Length: 265
Image (cartoon, rainbow, N blue to C red; front, side, top):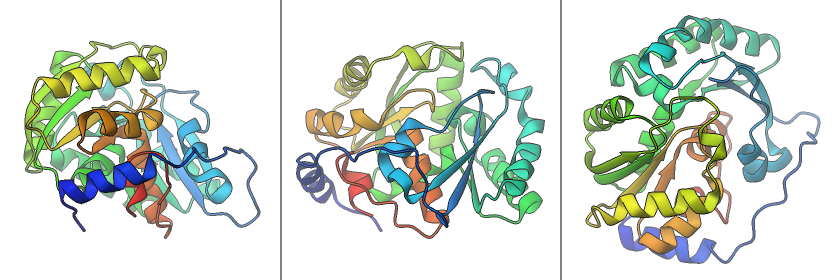
């Protein structure tokens, strides 16, 4: 399913009027369990996931211990991904999402698919990566010409441009915050991220969507304000990876108040 820009913007205007969902960490018995593999070692249950789906989904988390957001750093944890997925199976996961956008796109589309296939083959569970969540989101909103605001350095940004190009997207402009330390993205405030992302869009206003890439950035609350300001759909790492995971569990993934894509499911 794809939608025109007019339809996306109409949806964005509607969902902006809804308040954010109440969050909770209390799970009801029998709720579907989504396994999440995070690059940081000690990442807890994602706050964005609780805000999006409350107690409708139980999150099980395993961490990899990624030392830095660089290709050299990614190489140190690749072999830990499948064992983490296998651990999630023993904990009761029913589907698995590999979080960390750059961790899965840094070697291109074929490598991203290989990671997905490896998780599925080792566990027997449906699996998806954060990078695939971004691609699925862009396709659903009908994007072709995009801008990208990221946390990354130039080398990782160049790899993101190549990855998006492999999937048929033309990146008109990309700019990163130059971060390599794992702690960096978490220090970026909502208002700072909105301003930064909007400034990247302003360099290429002919774009039909904005990508905000890095699972370490908290982007959920930026989506609706960013869409209202720039008048194009916004697709970002953690929210749309969690959307992809919810779909694997058989849920619609729909939630209101956080941008047009999450509202249209």
